[in-house]
Length: 227
Image (cartoon, rainbow, N blue to C red; front, side):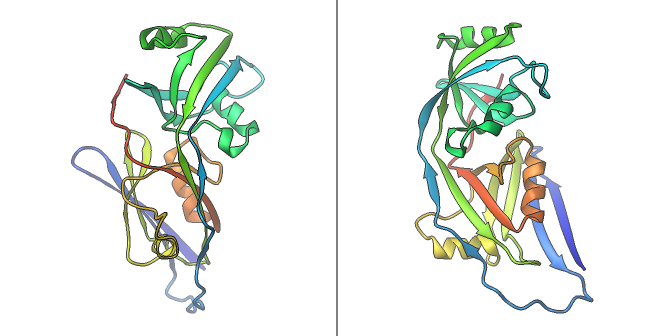
């Protein structure tokens, strides 16, 4: 029998540090050591995407976009996703064509003025046409054996799942040793785990339970204030 533990510690500024830990019960026999494996990392390059999204009462959240944004000079930065038209688009798009947290809405219905974009998004329209700047994304595929630790510390800041640190042992440091030019490191944002994009805690749960992990990461933090 194996046990899993998921813990979160609150920090003084209200953020959280999350430990993803997997361990054997005391009565379990020691497992044979099998080296974890990882595939070479892939890169989704930065690109501009145009989405035409129409309200659809037949899908969950079909009357809304289902995104939370913060305002920056370069556009409206998507911080989180939930059920809505954008996630419905994602479910039918290729991974490199999907929208992820950190992408920027740079125009809506032909307008690139930020004040106009905010106003249009608030209006009860039937169709939204979004121009979205998709940011450079790294894909890492990790395979873990039963009872293996991730060796990863995660932080939750304004709903965004981030890498707070990498431990000395576990699947993540093993990946870093095998891929010194493309390590998983503190400060990276995790935008998807096995096609789960909506909900940081759902991504953490997937990392705890799944054997094969397809993780999408981006460099750096989101430096803007919520609007």
